Image (cartoon, rainbow, N blue to C red; front, side, top):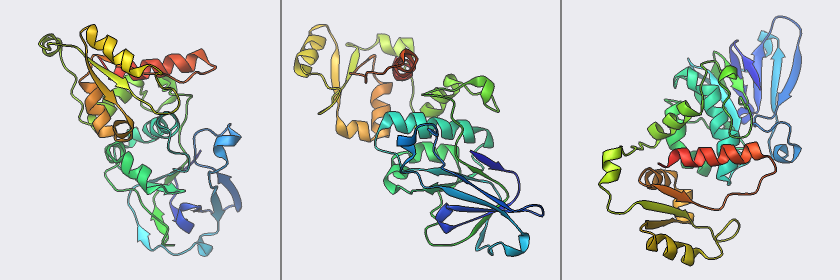
Length: 272
């Protein structure tokens, strides 16, 4: 992660950041993805070159912005667990204290990912994510290259500028997707408690899913299955989870018990 409080000029599709310097000239590179210690995860991440150079040799600005840029990669996508743990939570940690006054610049641009998480991105920034693939040069008063990362699904209050925790992140998600949590009186009015079952076709699936549904119904639950369509549409999934009393699914086996506990806590905090 690299932070520049000096004006910067971003070119080459977001892959080159020019920082004016009157002192020595030097270069460094950053792969703007959270799992920097995992070489396998970092392989598809394109490096961003940060060049400290003479003011006279900087490329001219095509567009000028009055707020800072945050540069991050969307190369590793398609898995919601990794997307939240390594992009969404790090974005929240990095950007929340800027109060939506920033502009996202994505490298390894994945337009479908940006659309998928538009509710969250629009909550973190008042501006659309920039696409610099046209070769233009954008000038900003400052920039952050890469994202702040604490650990797997982790928010450490002592390490964040404003001391954000999982509590604030949970509230942020509810605001992003307009999720209303039912109060006790609303729950008591339900004729049957609602059970949402995560239905998967390949890995981590119930081998006897129909039997599980039948048993839950016999126990008095109203059962709804969240399949592939629901899991890929976060707005729909959020509304389903906000209406449920129980969430059931098969979690991935992990080696670290801490990771398992954090994952379970994160899921069940969505669902009361």
